Image (tube, rainbow over all chains, first blue to last red; front, side, top):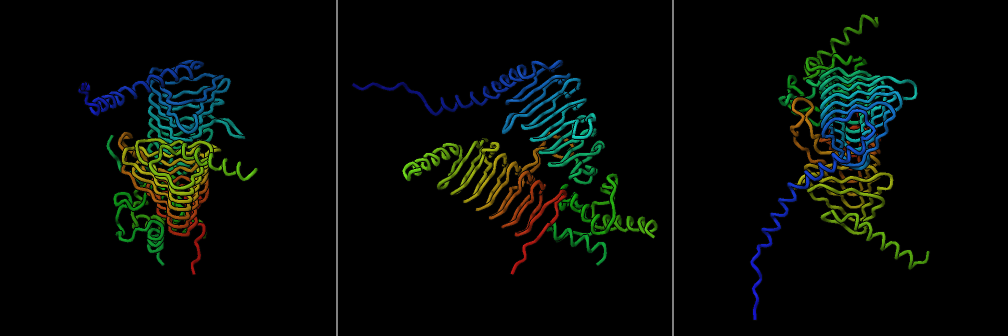
Length: 196
Length: 84
Length: 182
């Protein structure tokens, strides 16, 4: 007696499952990231909507933290850390993105604008061995890999801090800060406008 | 060697670009990127003993061989009266 | 240790290293992987023989981002902890090259300096040639091309061709010494 197997096109089913996984997985990851952010930022006084943390973060808040909407913290090799000491104010504008290993430390005041991008291993602290002075990062700033921003620095809107730079003086808007100590050059000198 | 030749030699030795005109834009021709521009600025400062202000790092001063040479000449002339 | 235990632990270490490199498409003879390596992305990672990845200090990241990205580590390459190689097109590390702790190598800037930050600039395939030494915390940006036997001092940012046998360092980078030939 021969029994016939039910006719199932296995490859087609597998492809369908794969397609399903591709659509479901990112949403599931995002949902998990948003729940994780809720938990990690439970001590934050003001937390925006849709904040997502795709990996572990170390958050220490003894002062006041004000976080905007739609922030993204990317997970990776090392966790990012946000530290706000007693009496300090740490504010982050909406849609700002953080890669892994970023360190933000506020002893007095650190203010980050909207739509900024922080690459991996960026360090930002408003106190060094000698003095404490507030740091202001305006909107649309891109701080590239491994850059260090020193106390009292103000980085202007749309400016870029190049990889590995150590910024010790203010950076005007639309400027590229590069080197150690960082020097400011016009972005028009080194980059073509790619449209808005 | 003239100022222009010294700068040209540095650019050729450092960035390995040989065929470029005196008036070619470094940016539009893709000859020098941002890190390279910083190296050029450091070379100009060290080799010609001048100090560039951050606000002088603009395309009008640095975006072609002719512009850099003219800018260096201007800076050297500014410096001379103070030195003497 | 007795010779038996020695050889046993060597065998186990080799197996463990291969387990940690299971995401690689090709792995050569006797790899050594200490600590953590984080190999991810849709692309391919090829590892040569006698490679040493020392991720005890911090994890090593090998990220072949898209499906046609490629990372090749040649024979006898040594990479220290915290190093991160991110390829959108390709990163090739030549035989005997040594990459220091917390170095970053990327062949794409991912964002343009001006204008629309969501547009992605073109990749520049990166080649790190045979016998190159890259100091810790150095950053290799798109356009970096390190030729045979050159040395990059710790913390240096590079985005251009460095000729064979040259040592570069500082910020902005400059030639610190040249190898005298002959």
